[in-house]
Image (cartoon, rainbow, N blue to C red):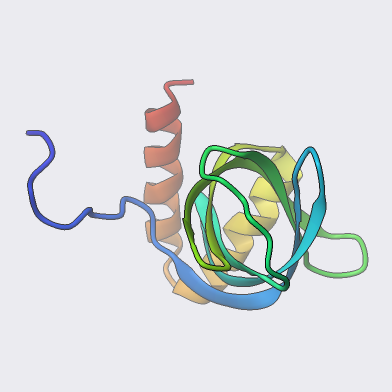
Length: 126
């Protein structure tokens, strides 16, 4: 069907996930707090005032332990004060595996995560 006039519907489930992250821009590396996470992106809050425009290319790095991390390459989708929505366009296989495991643990439903991964693959038309 097409878009409706109602609110936008999310295709990918977001989980609340608090932690520290780093947002790498071409011109700066910014500390941020991770607020939520999905297969398709994240919501972060910058730790300091900094202007970042929607459409800015970025890499979000989320440390998970001594050597594990999730690394999302993408762009800033939206800005509201210090809060930034990061849209993930690329992710390496290791990062995707870590993210998948985080989602499975937090959602408690492996089938939901499988459906979302299938939707992501279909969306990208690989």
